[in-house]
Image: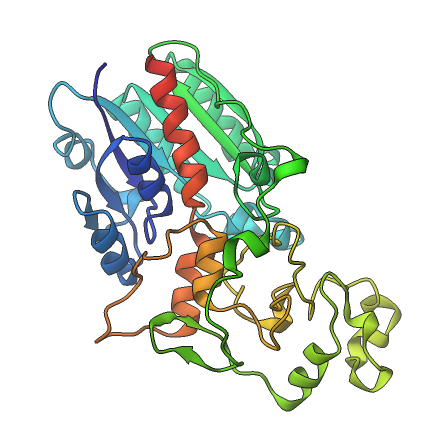
Length: 344
């Protein structure tokens, strides 16, 4: 069987890269504008080089010379999803500087003509013209295209996350491998994080610097003590409820200041998943938000994935961004397995 070598555009801390490697695809390089991702990317993906470069400014020659000779080429590009997210609806996302990045990816496809392509983003990307133009580019460039929304629990990812995945090949028809899980055996929060050491709000485990939770104010500590797993702030005494939630317009926002449930997948991890008030990110049992390590595990990063050097510990915000923006490692592996099966 021919060897596949991949280049990961918008690689971040290496979620997609690590998944592709786990599926036995040779990843040679990743590109990203966030220099803070270099350490995690190269530390955990030893044969892949990190390039701190803007994808919109990459040339055909820069990419082409990185692919080994006689290998089938896979070009992966998971452009930043914020311009296409439901959170951006109502704002003029056309002014977002990240908007043209999918066009930049399409231009590289036309210039390089790799044998295989993958792209992953939020489901709402399909509503935008840039996505429709991207698919047209692939088809005009003689790619067979598979594109659909993927429900992550169907593939063993313990997170209620929906993503839109595109697979394309110049070799022949391609599709994502069939789901590996059903509702009867979805991976749960408990299966994923239950065995981690107990820590208090604001505390860090001495054995794992990533296993740290954010501090809680006196008010939020009282709130989480009244929060039930899977419940909402409606469970609190009236004295703890925020004034904005008492208004008619705020009563429907029940997905914040809440605990996860042990026996279900977690909510979607975001760049602010370490904050109790930012969503259903309260630990199911302990009086704190989930730790950064727990968030990484729910994103299916291995427990020994290293995000920073002990001598250079980034801010909560920086690490949360790396974790929340990542493609779940297991989804990357599923994408890689789909290309391997395609060649078989």
